[in-house]
Image (cartoon, rainbow, N blue to C red; front, side, top):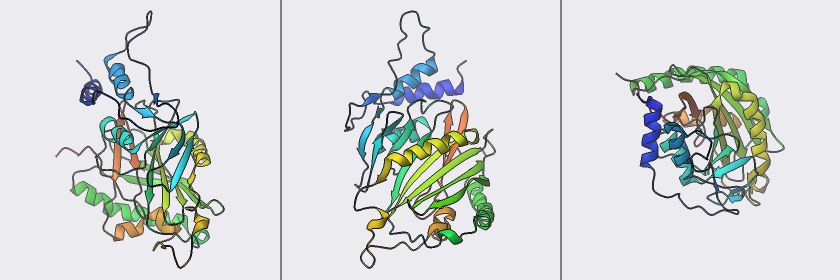
Length: 314
């Protein structure tokens, strides 16, 4: 009898379009894996491996210079990373990982040395919120321990709402990495540890916000808690090749002319303004090789939350 995962992957492979989506690139698009046919003398791939290979063969990864949609930021993707366009990233999020459709991104980054469909695979979702220039004047005065307590208290009400809608609760365990703000680079770093009843391992949500002239560039990485040290190192690499374009950086802000956001650094972490606006916190759920990862994504001022794609059975 085929395993549920085997059936799932086979169905995914059968649902794919006949040819890869086209993307422009500074280099010839890289196919993520070689054809699934076994070479002479090698064992034939399993049904699951063949389905994964078929899916990945239709992904056009890019390296080199990448201008992100909207024209506010760019990437210089090195050999040890690879980029997917928003359309291709959506295929990972929705078709491969089982997330709800409709998430608007600027694309995704993946490490070159592991498949996004592998148990240890991970990715970075890139988004941009055009909501005005964020004043960082409150950065040094934030009590992050007190903020964490407030966020935990708020999550109780959020969980009641999730459960009422048939989704499993999410527990904010604590900081995986306490928030810190790099005032010179205008970058905010923090990571949260989350737990879900159906997940054996706690989930790591590693977040970086890059403040710009009139908006915030967001990089959200999701992995298991056991990958924390690796993700921290790899995200430093990401920051070394990602930036706003000239004229869109924080220092380019023109007081009295450019728009100013109605919130500061603390709200970016806590997401209080988003909650007050009645925005329901969103969770992406990804089932990779039997292992569940959850991405707590930010949209707008703070944590919008994407609903888990799998509802609890009544």
